[in-house]
Length: 481
Image 1: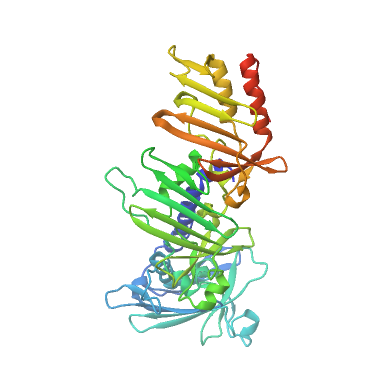
Image 2: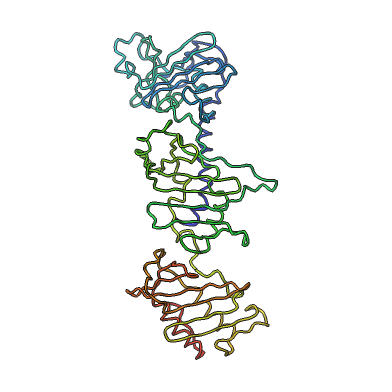
């Protein structure tokens, strides 16, 4: 995953919500009046529209929807609030529910196909794709039956009739889309984790740690906030600096995770198995000044258009399974190499005071004082004066150490002794020590401050020995190995 992609992850998550909101606005912005009418107007060739009914959305007291996904009931309580039967104990997706009621408040017929149909089945109306029952304050009731899509239509339309009637209409599919394929769970708020309140400086509560445990990793990834450095660092499986892109994302942690939708409520044991949440693919946890959040990530799904999502649950709301876009979960795509800088040492040339190097054939000590750009700079190698360029070049070679892959198993160096070590002492007496263990096949396992951390090519130390000799002789160093 490239750095530019990572920078847009959170923006993509927000765009999903905005797009859905825009869709709902499109559905509900048509002005209405509390009236029924049979007026007709010609809106396009061979299409004569007729208003079948129109009521105020506030006059709807009950809405029942039945479709291929199941059925649900929306009722207006004594205070006028819309509630969903069976979802009394969860936070509702109020905008979606309001949109459903808005859509149910009126309907326009494009054409009458048959006045007294003898066979409703040919229109898909004997067993409708969806049925919508609407009850109004005055006791009126309408039951909408939605049938098949109309083939070869210039724009999306469906067959329609009122229950108990045999007049078949064609109506635009767009106003009825919300009723087709919606499940009761979709009326649950898609907000998985909330965004806490910002402080007077518009800052979110500090994220202290974000930890990723994935079944496809032999290790845990832990990114922690370093109070002294006021930045995030990788602490597991190894100690490394993080890229600026990841450090930009981390302050948001798991704040404000929004799902595509809720997909299961309440959750039974069999649902956990089906969703892969009995043994999650990943557990992502956050500790922050606002508290703790933990996401359990289950099976991955790919839609027909290639959109990827994961089934997930959040700790504290284990009775709901959500579908979350993979764009909102970058932690399911990254590895250590994606989120860290390429170099190992935290010290830089100007902060370095001393370098001690031991190999099979040599032992060297380099000391330095002052910054490379200042006249007060001095450096020595084994007591012999070095130039700025000489110090810069040997430090560059050391600094350019690159690992081949992560090592986490201490047993790989069991019984071995290091054949080389490099210790860099920097400002504040901070020490960073790499020790190299020959494990065969031209590979070395490297410990960082005593912790098994990396695999690298043994050639790195071989070239280092040559460079130390070249440095003594005043020759140009070799920078590749």
